[in-house]
Amino acid sequence: MACVVIVGSQWGDEGKGKVVDLLTEGARGIVRFQGGNNAGHTLVVGEDKFIFHLIPSGILHQGKACYIGNGVVIDPQVLLQEMDKLDKRGMPVGPEKLRISDRAHVIMPYHQALDLAREKAKGKQAIGTTGRGIGPCYEDKAARVGVRMIDLLEPEVLRAKIEANVKEKNFWLTEYFSEEPLDAAQIYDQYLEYGNILRDYVGDVPAELKELLDDGENLLFEGAQGIHLDIDHGTYPYVTSSNPVSGSVSSGAGVGITKVNDVLGIVKAYTTRVGGGPFPTELEDDTGAWLRDKGQEFGSTTGRPRRCGWLDTVVVRRSVMLAGITGLCVTKLDVLTGLDTLKICTIYQTPEGEEMDSIPASLERLGACRPVYEELPGWKEDISGARSLDDLPETCRAYLDRLTELCGAPLTMVSVGPGREQTIVLENPFD
Ligand code: GDP
Ligand code: IMO
Ligand code: MG
Image (cartoon, rainbow, N blue to C red; front, side, top):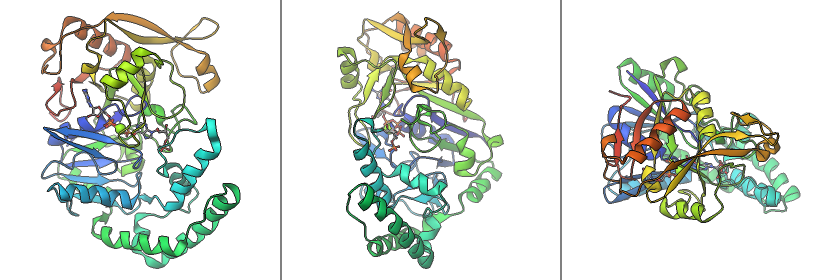
């Protein structure tokens, strides 16, 4: 029995989906524990490409069960669309293959309306959310007025919750944001219908996971977003509204932290960020544009161009600390091929000229810091066919060695292309 957690060590889109798909072979259950359809996880299998927002990235494998934990916020319409797409591609998702926590909160139309209205009102101060209603849904959860999956199965509870919520939300939407009101009866009919369709999928996920663990099975936990988007540890307020750190496996899936054996931190070989917020190593020049183009850095969820920059090891080192990362999986190394020199940010320098190996809580202070770089020689050889470290040019290995040394955790995997097979596996956490 082993529990392995996959987390993004930067600002998301590190390639978590690919790694989860790859490691699924060694697990029996694949579990999402936080976030919602703000996530976009891309899997490339042969000529086929799949993007999942809610369904765990293990779904393409036979004989595995995928779980959506209580820490996830679920937009039922998006979930059903994803299931439908898989069905049309000849991979039906039945209730034995996909299990949904009865305690997971549901994203309602007023959450999305409020998310969009707030972002619009913020103007230049906008967070740059995905506009999927994630923040307002988690707000309602914390305010103890949220709708949970179980409520979709209990008509009277659902009706009362929707009526009360719509009354309050319509006040904010119309009086404060000058937006259109929503219709409670219409929402009720629609969500009751979602409940009817999803009824057999809904269950007590922690109890089901315990059964697997008792049978000696392995579990793989799929994080969404990245640790620097964590609501507690990220660059607040430019964060998401959940906890992508590994610790939320316990609160978001109902598996005790003592069960976790390994935490694999996914590190993109450079850095990207979508939406607003600080990004010390951002490149707003030709090199940044080159990385975006070569790495196809456009959001899997919103299609927005991702901001690109050099690898920031202050960011990753902090993630190693915050998430207890036991191994690093470096992705998109192939994208760096062709550059004469590469830069790695080793530390920040304060305006007073002092070295700083942390990310200050004050965004003003962070904005005033400048990244200190080390330069390393690049490589020109195509590395997308590499299947062992020996297949990599010397300068490429030197980059990996320095990255690993600076980030402070051992290297377990290197990804050199989007395909499943384009991976150098040094250590499989399930072996
Ligand atoms: P996630 O949100 O962390 O799962 O990452 P995304 O799927 O949003 O973004 C990662 C993108 O990079 C996807 O398009 C992947 O297919 C692609 N990708 C993953 N690993 C590699 C790699 O090693 N090389 C290249 N070129 N692309 C990769
Ligand atoms: P995956 O799982 C990258 C970003 C948004 C925005 C901020 C808040 O694919 O790595 P939200 O809609 O969550 O309230 O937006 O968080 N964001 C992501 N960026 N990858 C993601 O997920 C993200 N999920 C949210 O761009 O800046
Ligand atoms: Mg993504």
